[in-house]
Amino acid sequence: MKEEIHSFLNYLTVEKGYSGNTIAAYQNDLNGLVGFAEKEAARSGLMPSWTNFNRQGMLSHMLDLKERGYVPTTVARKVATAKSFFGFLKAEGTITADPTENMSSPSVGKSLPKPISISQVRSLLDQPAKLNTPEAKRDAAMLQLLYASGMRISELVSLALADVNTGEGFVRCFGKGHKERLVPIHEQAARVVQEYIDETRPRMVHHKEETALFLNPRGDRLTRQGFWQKLKEYAKSAGLDVQISPHTLRHSFATHMLSGGADLRAVQELLGHANISTTQVYTHLTSEHVRRTYDKSHPRAK
Image (cartoon, rainbow, N blue to C red; front, side, top):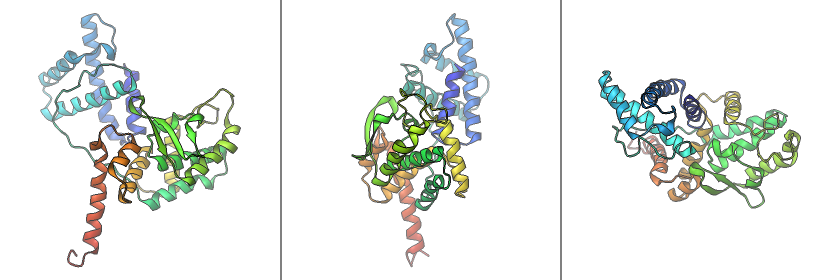
């Protein structure tokens, strides 16, 4: 059961870009949950597993927290953590039923994603060219593709060679729930990716049967953690004094598209959001930018 927690925390770190303190809070909540679930399984004579942890078990956990004196805000946070965790497990196919589905919990508010500016993106994308290595050429292709498409990092590292059509300018990727979508990419990104495919990938592949698009030095599929580590190094060399994660480029893609006049529905499709309400969070960012520009520029607003 702890293996699934580790995968979830890794997802929050790499894809969501959560801080170390936030990850520690999630881990603390989930350690309490797994401890309770294991005790419940032992009491019921069942094998400890998340598939055996049902809605009644979750309600019992909430009651246990209240009886142990946790304040309502702490209980609400722990329930929110559980809802995120089980939502992740269901999306990954680990469980078929979410024990927290339709379970109410107080709203805790959602922080807005933090994009970086277009000039910061440009600086970040320029960093791999300073290194003349196969890995740097791979990283250049990955960064270009990530910002050109707005893909999730999990979608990027899962790409197969056959998923990319640089001639037509699109990429086939599989999002949450294994939903397939075609994402267009611009000519510059397509060119960098094709150069990697033609010139660099053949030097990195060790086994002819390997289908992964992006490879590590051992010739295996590059992991999310591997790319995230490289991204942090490029952000540092670019002098970016903000916290960077692969999800930062996804946030920036969406924000810059909307700022440039893209239709909200189109951005929803590109990002692979099931609900447009998820995409609408980016309109707050562009609205904030408009407000700052207004306050700075209007003669009566100064």
